[in-house]
Length: 310
Image (cartoon, rainbow, N blue to C red; front, side):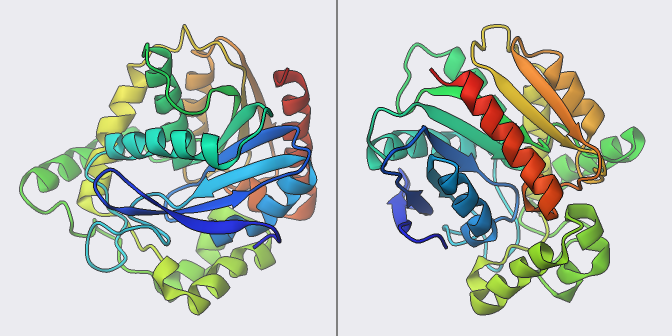
């Protein structure tokens, strides 16, 4: 992890410990809160933290409830949540905490990857509709490969999510969904790498961290996670962003196979101030890709910051 950073714990309202990372900057151009994706953990993004810090950003990040080094909701390493609204409430607390933990006058940006991008857009929408605005107030938002829908055919999607709702309603929410299971060797297979990144070193780095710290591993999703995702996707689709008055940068992966680019473009058409850029050779984890693609994405983020910030 980058020198000068601190890993700490934020006790949430219900006592669940949330694992946080803070990296101050003596002369920050901005403070940036990073929301990572499903099954991610802080160390997986250590190189990105260092690169963003070198570019002039003070940083805050965390492991979502139920994954990484934060408090788990079910025994074992299953990826589980009761509702994405729980994560949004957690983000309210994070936003208040980091605004004080990284003091200064530098403006805030927020960056959401995949599931983190989904939650960021829902959080911003709820914030714009509220008269009460605790915590940080972002000047801009960056989305990388945002989860706006699954990249699966519509009939299969409807069947899977309908079944997930049924299973969760009948007491099986904490059970793994079909084809899912604990972290294991299959998570380090070439087929998974092809979905995430073309950079073998970046891909294998995740497995090295988990071998050293097995508690960081998060396996496949539960029926409950899928049911919660279905509910949250419905809410995102029905949300109006007409009053969202901050600029948004959306970076999409040209080799995307995990989330739906067409759905992301549909979201972009509903945003008042948005720039969309397709990195045609990148896979899902754009900011953990091979050096040329990652450098292109970082350069684009820096240009966005230069125009979005006061």
